[in-house]
Amino acid sequence: MPVFSSVSRLAAMALAAALLAAPARAGTLYDDLGGRAGVQRIADGMLQRALSDPRIKDKFQDADIERLQGLLMLDFCKLAGGPCRYPGRDMATAHADLNLAPRHFNAIVEDLQDSMQAEGIPFRTQNRLLALLAPMHRDIVAPPGAKPEATP
Amino acid sequence: MTWKPLHLICGLAWAAAAAGVSPAQAQDRGKLIATAGLIQIEGAGGGGLAPWALITGYGTRDSVGANVHGTVVRVTNFTLSTLGAAVGLYDRVELSYTRQFFDTGGTGRALGLGGGYQFSQDVFGVKLRVFGDGILDQDSWLPQVAVGMQYKVNNRTDVLRAIGAKSDQGADFYVAATKLFLTQSLLLNATVRMTRANQFGILGFGGDRSDSYHPEFEGSAALLLSRNWAVGGEYRTKPDNLRFAREGDAYDLFVTWLPAKWVSATLAYVDLGSIATRKHQEGVYASLQLGF
Image (cartoon, chains in turn cyan, blue):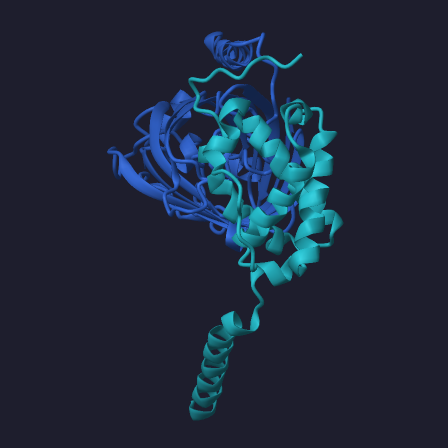
């Protein structure tokens, strides 16, 4: 069927063109999160939620919240491909004394998801940021041997 | 057969004992929603047809998590119902018990078994997570891998012998690899199962055509639409051991709603292939799961 084959060839070419064009058209994750202002709101929203989250708020007792606010924004910005430099300590050093368990790590992920949801970030875009953050569990969560202290 | 109810009691005790292993440790419900998977047809944490490498329940490495489930699969000529409980221990070990009821409907009469003839089967499952973190290790292709066993005991010894099955009980052994590709919001699973089970064991184990273990493949793909909704499909190959009736592959297309960590509901279109001379067994799969 020549008609069918030319139609399918056209469709294939259109598909190939769309696939090739897609990366060029799509903005960076940083853009999709709303640029500097958007990333700042997402980071702030996460921190505010975490500070009142009974599962993890105690972990912020000794934290300099204002400094943390700035660092979180810069960290997310840099990860998402934005024009930022992260001046903080590395993740392992920064979290070494906090004795964080997987449940703490996942609690803050949920706070971040809530924050992005409140900002109207689409689910798939949210997951692109989470995919960049998730591997940090290796530096943030204390090894299984380090028994997390019982929280009152 | 007074020892059959004993299975039910043993099974429930198995699950309850596991749930009570660590009463001092509060259930932390620390996993992210949907990352504990669902419960598959034989009671293991998985999709609907295939066991996954994820450990069921929302407990992390410091905690335990448990759930109960009920599933009804209603296909053209048969109804398969399952009830069970599963426990995840420290995100490392999973124990499960499920009882399956297989109602032969009008086919029972046609095969000389009587109308509404029912098979039932107990499935005791154990799964061990071997390595990998399928959810958080997003910078690597390495999946989470688990090995598992399902020991199945069917209650219809005489009928199973009559249709050519070699045994009324058997063990399946599987290896499952599961990976969440978060950038694509896509979860993929591949399982290889060594089995002699006919129709999941409902028609016994081994047969007059073949009585040896066969490797079978089970694949799942699930697309996460939001934190509370997922859609996907699964495919499962099965052995073909009995002369009296051919056995084919099964597949499903599902939608799952997870409004909270303690409850999920799954609705699926399922095609189980040919069962006991009845071709093209397709219909609806509905499952409700409650966690605690």
